[in-house]
Length: 131
Image (cartoon, rainbow, N blue to C red; front, side, top):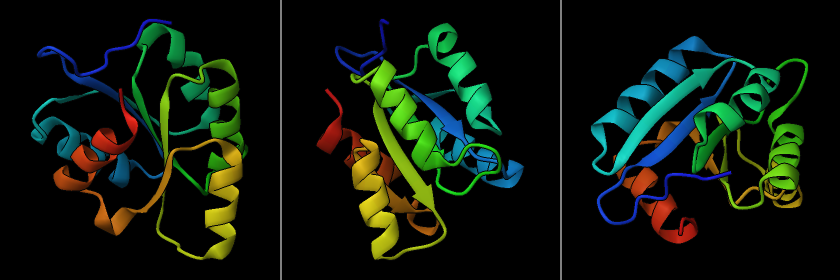
């Protein structure tokens, strides 16, 4: 899979996976307002995300931890098994030691709170974990 990496003037392609439409819309707006990033899609389930990975070729995937049918921990594991080069960031309204441990075991590069999500966090995540 070839991914957009944000090098030499190209933008980092971001896919957002969250079962709440309002957060998908907010994330889209933040991504599009952040220099060097572009939103390539927002989906409401893990199954939809897996179906779009090959077609859209994101470099960064934002994944909600709590979703019906397939939660973000399981989705992160599946993404990293198939595409270890992708940067996966788990997002949640919750915080706590269970989530941190689950995020770490899922292969995700980071776990962040939704309330903190904004341009500077997005840029910092990419600087720390992107290539």
